[in-house]
Each structure stands twice: as structure tokens, then as C-alpha cells.
Image (cartoon, rainbow, N blue to C red; front, side, top):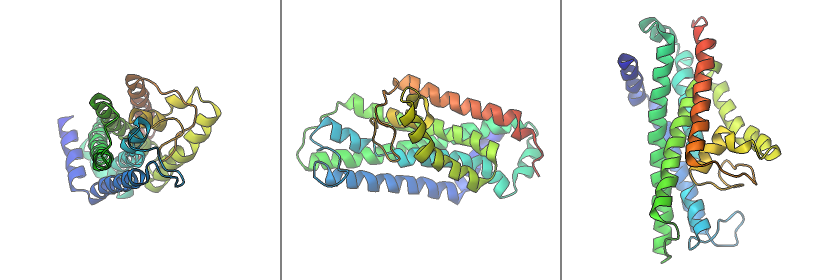
Length: 260
């Protein structure tokens, strides 16, 4: 397993697409956090409450929704990229234990996703708190809550990336699996969660977003309204379960198929 992990981390460090995706996620997070913080408390359309309120500050700090989706996409690229670039044959011939290769990819994806989530959370927190302090507002959220939102974004992004690695192994076609991730986050969860609010907290993106501080009906992409969030350990359990399930199905089916 150590050899597989070393190989996966080496690929991540030397792949421009992964680095570019992480940079894009942080840049979009910075843009969203800046726009939300700059217009907070105004009458502009979709403006968040004033940063002088706990609701407004929370919304600014939780501007990490796109980064969560980017982490899932990164996970899909780690596995599906092997088939797009036709390197899967060499990878699996060098490491015949396909299950171990998939496990290494899922672990590498989780680490990379967590780092991406941490960077996005730090960016959103710095911008949100910076605007609040610059305007002379008191910080209406305790440090423990701010840290919890950051930890939620970090853990949520890591586990979504691991789930993405499983999805990429199942679908294999890189463009198709990336489209599937966006369709799931922007359409499927919103429709299913809006129809059955009792199910919504157990949907992967919704669980991750709420761990990161997103409230019912908010976020980018948005989560359904009237959703009662799970406790952070419960949300993490949902995401871990999704990652394990996708990896197990991939290991039992598509990973065993011909790789050429």
C-alpha cells in the first residue's frame, strides 16, 4: 500500500490539472466570499444579512460550496484520468492488486480534497472576518463555531473527494463523471431533498455543505429548504459511508473489468 500511496501522491504533485482545479476552487471561493461580504446587509438581490449579525457572518464564512464540488471533481479525475490518458494499463500491470490501487487512490483523493477544503475555508474565513473587522462590527460567532465550520469544510471536501474517486472508477469516462457530479449537486439533491426533506440531510453534498455552515436553503450550489442538519459526526458518517459504498461497488464490478 505504501508504494501505491507514494505513486498517487506523486501524480497529484506533478499534475497541472489537479493544481489548477485547486487554484480555481480557492479563487471562486474568494470571489463569492468577497461579493457576499461586500453586499451584506444591503437591499441587493440575494444579499446575505449584515456581517454584524451571526446569520450574515455565518453565510460569509460558509462560502465554500463550490470548493466542495471541486473536491468531488478532483476525486473523479484521480481515477477516471487513468482511463482518459490511457495510463490505467500501466498502473494496474505495475500493481496487480486492483483493490489496493483503488484504496490508495481514494486515500490520496481524501487528503488532496481535505487540503483543498482547508484552503477554501481559510480563504472564506479571512475575507468574511476581514470585512467584519474593517466595518467595525463585533464578531458575533464564537471562535469554536468558526473553527467548526472550517473543520466541516475540510472534512467534507476530503470525504467528497474520496467518494468522487469511487464514482470515477465506476463511470470511467472523465467528462461523463464530471457532468454527473455537477448534475447531482445542482439538480438531483435539490429535487430529491426538496421533495423529501427527511432524506435531504443524508445526501452527500447537502451533508457536507451543512457541516461547513451552510443553512437550509442557502449555499452555492443551493441546498433544499426546511432541512434539519445532522450533527457533524453524523454528516461525516454519511459522507464516509457514501465513499465506502462507491469504492466497494467499483471494486466488485468495474475495477475487475478489462482495463484496455
